[in-house]
Length: 120
Image (cartoon, rainbow, N blue to C red; front, side, top):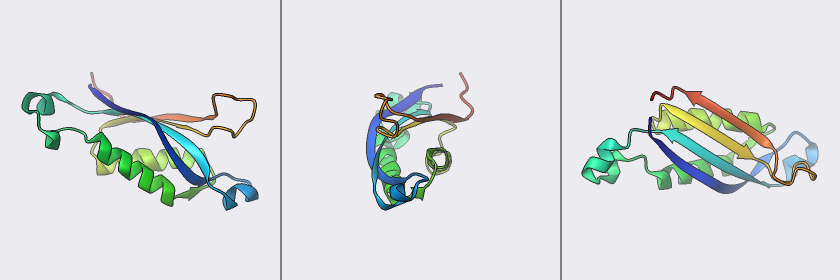
């Protein structure tokens, strides 16, 4: 299966289990890989047949900015469900990085989930 990807999508969110985290916004970095058959769009050069990564990005940013979860895991699950239902992607791999959550982890911490079926 072909993949459409978005990497390094930065967004501020209310995220965290500690009381002090509930009063601030923290930066998250979202990476997405989504299964999509690109052949119809490539054959016709028609954006309407493509997975519009600008629209996906806008929707992810809108959703995350409006969210308020304790766990990054919950946000990841909800985003995967949203992408699969609203954009009809059959498969998604999603990484959410919470930079600065662990000072010594200079590359950040977070989760990676994969949902759906990626057929070759």
